[in-house]
Amino acid sequence: MYRLGLEHNGFSVTVAGNGYTALQLLGERRFDLVLLDMQLPSMDGLELLGEVRRQHCNRTLPVAVLSNLDREEPTLDRARELGVIGCLLKSQTVPRTLAGHIRSWLPHPP
Image (cartoon, rainbow, N blue to C red; front, side, top):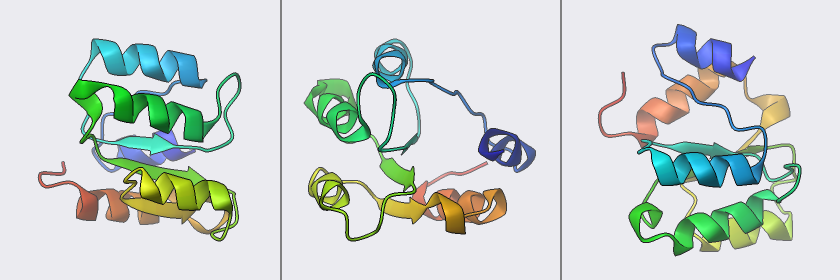
């Protein structure tokens, strides 16, 4: 749903089904933004975020959380400490709203 909605709003979207695939993609290509779910198979989102921040080329890469974790969840506190630019609740964020947030986060959105 999010991929289709974002593409409809002019964004190019690459989907990674798990944290290891995301790390591989981040090592191969440059991205403008990462939307991160904290509940991923094989590697949770917080672990992935830590790995991204350890990579020199991705230390300043904008990362936003799109997850169903409660806003007061300690995991999200740690994600904020690691520099995420926003935390959105999936159940309250439709694709059009997400596209608006992305436009506000990126210096040159589509």
